Image (cartoon, rainbow, N blue to C red; front, side, top):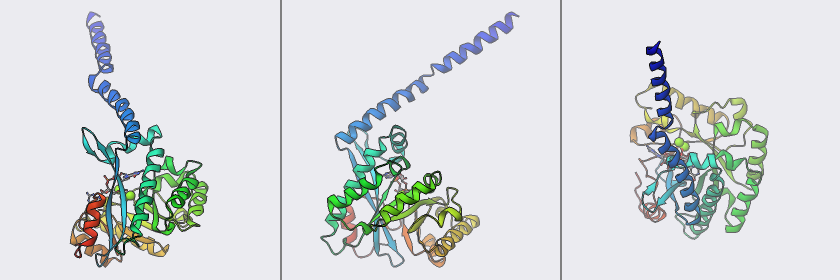
Length: 287
Ligand code: C2E
Ligand code: MG
Ligand code: MG
Ligand code: MG
């Protein structure tokens, strides 16, 4: 009996201890602190956009993807995976997303002045929370008008998972923006569960093959088969297709042989601040 009591006490003691696990407490504090810091970051303009070129089969850039970074006063450049999901959970992604759109449109306007940049398409990532805000369409149209940019140079990247729950809302939001020329790309394609039934109803312009399929395309025959299927699917739905995460010439060549002629990845350029992007664009050989 005494043994059992001792065992139970120890066990509950352990449970209690676990509850006060300093690591766990630490992570809660970190979250609260991070949320506070994120709000501050917005007010004190600590976010930056980096730009990664997208090229065609001859290596010519036709677009860029804007990717957010957080220039933290102590921690330096913080990548999106460290703060985007918390920003989504707290709703902060909406004002952050507005800042991204605003900054991207401002940049598009500046690009109009130079021959090298005036035709570049700007891709902007949009999160589900942001997309389903009732004033999302208005916000995007306002940004376009405020900066007086050509709407067909703006491409919004959406992900599969966010589109499927509310398919009717999704279609009408997309159509309202498509009516003025805004384009849409389906990001990380292949990682979600889109059926062809849904895909054919969405007013998309582009499928973006997820990096995870491109990575091993040269060595993994099932990844190769998946990529072939995505490219065929895109073509039969009359959509452009772009591969993300292209790092080697071999990967590019395989994609090209399969009919994918648009690429994004370290082979062509990493995401960089605007000054560096402009230097890259001025150089002739990009690959
Ligand atoms: P994503 O939209 O799929 O962006 C592509 C990611 O792949 C970027 O990571 C890019 O730096 C990385 N990448 C591109 N080429 C290569 C390559 O050849 N090799 C490797 N290993 N990686 C490559 P990043 O910039 O860290 O962004 C991660 C994710 O954060 C993005 O994935 C996107 O989902 C999200 N994100 C970034 N900016 C924004 C934003 O402004 N708003 C929202 N809502 N999400 C954003
Ligand atoms: Mg993207
Ligand atoms: Mg992607
Ligand atoms: Mg991705």
